[in-house]
Length: 100
Image (cartoon, rainbow, N blue to C red; front, top):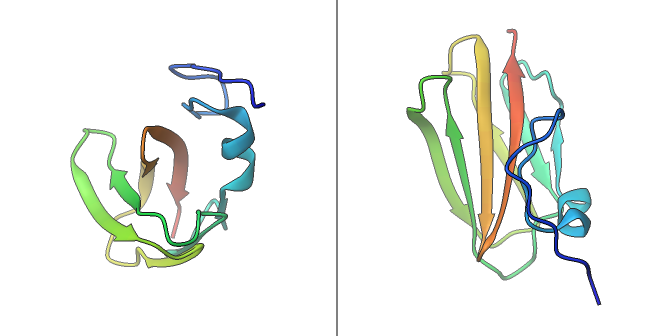
């Protein structure tokens, strides 16, 4: 039985409902020069990836059922972004740095 934890944020920039699921999902490299990989997503289950800038504007959005997703973020400007991964009711938010 897993322990459910609800946090709005912590010092690592992560918001999640389940600490075990959080550990399975990886975002790399971070900082990124524009090519980003997200791995550890559940296979055959819909995952939504949304990236927002510091103003809250969605700059990238994708749905996938694959365990790994390679994102081309080269068109995005240098800066700090939030990557939100939604899988059913589970949500993970991580900070992404693009220092190209």
